[in-house]
Amino acid sequence: MSHDLAEALRQLLGPDGAEITSLQRLSGGASRETWSFDLVADGGVRPLILQRLRGGGAAGSTGIPMGVEAALVRVAGRHGVPVAEVVTSDDGSVLGRAGMVVARLEGETIPRKLLRDQEWAGAVGRLGNQVGAALAAVHAIPTAEISGLSTTDQLAQFRAILDGLGEPHPAFELGFRWLEAHRPAPTAPTVVHGDFRLGNLLVDHDGLRAVLDWELAHLGDPVEDLGWFCVRAWRFGSPLPAGGVANRESLVAAYEAASGRTVAAEALRWWELLGTLKWGVICIMQAWGHLSGGSRSVELAAIGRRVCENEWDVLGLLPGPPLVVDPPVAVTPVAPLHDHPHLPELVEAVREWVEGDVLEGTEGRLAFHARVAVNALRMVERELAQGPGPALAHRAALSVLGCQDDADLAARIRSGSLDDRLEEVRAVVSVSVVDKLRVANPTWLAVEA
Image (cartoon, rainbow, N blue to C red; front, top):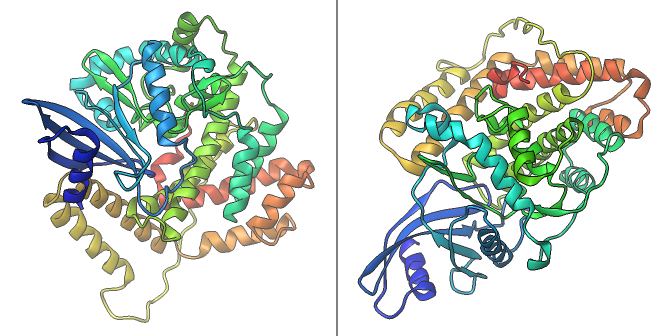
């Protein structure tokens, strides 16, 4: 496969006699492959990056066409946004699937390295101000110079997506209902990056080097990008609420100074809540990319269990009493029918093998996916230890509300028929989300600002 791709890249980029060398697949997003390579031509070597759509459909992607993205990045660069130079794009006629080639720049994109390695401490300390300035430049891009970007009511869009997935989530319905009732005043639409966060920013030792991955760009409210940057998922364990690199106040101050705009705290919170809900829905979409067979991937499968993180954060962002985490209910073990090793012991054995032998013998993408597999196996271990108690308790709590299941509860929240019992509903939903988090990611249960 890599040989065929190298030949396609040579045809796309090279003059006669050009070579493609050092072709290596990197860890990519849910909807795209990322490849690093060198173009050797005319006695020189040019380091490049290819981004190409994944095969089998782009799980979780609602992005713009690659050609539109390439044109937008070129325009952004002309207007002062730090970007990687676009070399060329292809609609798939040469590369097999749509792709874009950009200059390969030096720097780091992996959030956990940036936030944890002392090597990057100085650069990360400058990111808050640089992000504010970069977003101001994004939102100042003249809309008349670009085409192919749409304006969408994202509240309606993601509610429709969730309905189409057939997977009801009462916590999200509480979020949708509040967001609909508290929309910010409309503003003149600007270019919105749509996925501005660590992971999509290239950082060198001077700070922000380039803004990457413009596939979700559209026209809309500029505060959307600031709210998305503050979504808890993009803090990667840092206590700082603005992308893990700053507090909200300093981010807003830097943005206001560079843009001349004023950002209301209420609007920022609204967009942070919507961003949290959106990421939860996207996690469901990505999991279904795996479950449908469109793009089989342990990474996409595991992302489905991250939905409850977003449910918890939605509940925490909604007005109301603080969320309370009660201690877990003790589980009475049932003697298994089968011989040793019992199911938990089998899972533990596989997890230990992946965590030891596989991780020690792999690197790059394989090592990353091995870590994902270890996390997935830990979820299985915790779910087996939890037993059926939480599911039975949730069914009883639903019965008290007069609901048959979560689908019934979600429909009643949407209709408003439980508005006079919202505090009780929120309590039932939060308990169920806590039980899911105790399996998926217990560390997420600390309430963060």
